[in-house]
Length: 366
Image 1: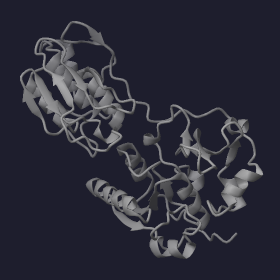
Image 2 (image 1 turned 60 degrees about the vertical axis):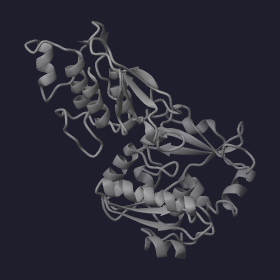
Image 3 (image 1 turned 60 degrees about the horizontal axis):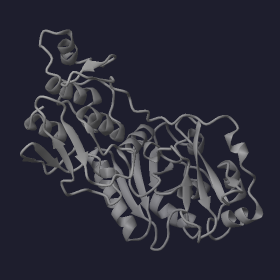
Image 4 (image 1 turned 120 degrees about the horizontal axis):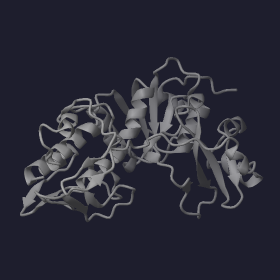
């Protein structure tokens, strides 16, 4: 694949600042949203051009996720598709939706330009078909074979029935933490969300359910301020593919099939708002919403209210969310809690919530 075609592919998957230098194409990394420091504005990503063999790529930025840091172009497309959750619907090269070209479209481009198959061969007919999906292996430029495209598994597997039974009921110390000035939760709230206790790590265990109501993971929250990190998430659980609070049970009763949704950062923000009567709150597990989370949010709600913390970081997070939702042509309003408070703080009262969010879906006085 020549430098021009490589540049087109990199542009399609979101690379910027492309520069061709001899046998190399330099660009910003397509996995920039997964970097620990935010956007990567320097050309840390390089593709080594190879017209007669397989072109390879490498990123010098220290990735902290499961995205690849080197490989061939086949691996690049698969890594990009897995990180962005691209759709599987077929599309010709150049077709776009709100997440970019389809996985098949990217594969067609790579194979058409790198395999150099004969235009009268069955392989070329498959590549030229708009409904193409590779169920079998295709030859690479170097004569080797690579696996057919595999769909990224965005849905987490369900945990075994009775999984939470391995944890203990909440002891007095944990109940004091949840009921006290740190969380201000009522006993019915603690019971509804199924909070448990891990005696080994001395953490409150929070079950995580998906859109189908399946238990898919747990989070463990320390009850001691000096214990770091605050949260421990189950190994293998990909938070960027889920929203906390998306379980239909936690959102009932709601006024319609697709009501307004409330975006917050943390799990206890959702739980606290639920106690106040707001049934449309979901958490991003942080201050940034991934493309996969945005898709899930759009499937559940008709509009969005971002309720961010009352500090500078909250203002920044709100502005980023506003830009992201407006780019996806999805209505959003950004509001902030009073300075020094967050939605999970007991000092954030129902009256304050009503001023920002309007009336709750249910009466919280029960």
